[in-house]
Length: 125
Image (cartoon, rainbow, N blue to C red; front, side):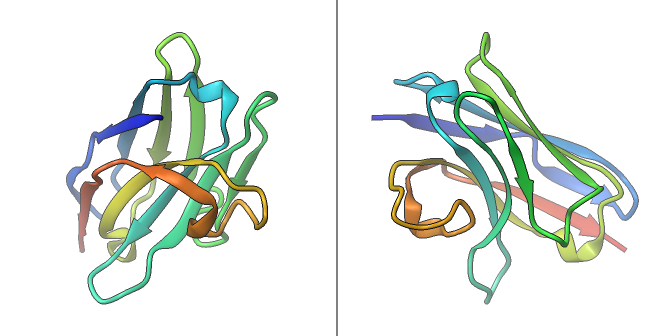
């Protein structure tokens, strides 16, 4: 099993930056693909970014490409999401998750088995 704890959310003005952290315990993060998802009120959970196990290839939703960066620190067993040039539409609860199933794609929530509790990001205009 893997336990995940997100932190770093908060209130920021449009154009500002935040760095989210996802601390893992129970397994090493470089053994898994780790994804960030977000869910706004009344909307479905959507893919934001992912970093693959091993080589650490990165993937991004079109809506955040060029603004967000996902990274991994194996020594701290953590994954990060650096978010720059934030927009009001980025407001959501952000979750990190560990992939356990490979019968789908990295952008599908259904292939992730372990989830953190989420951290709120609010971007004011």
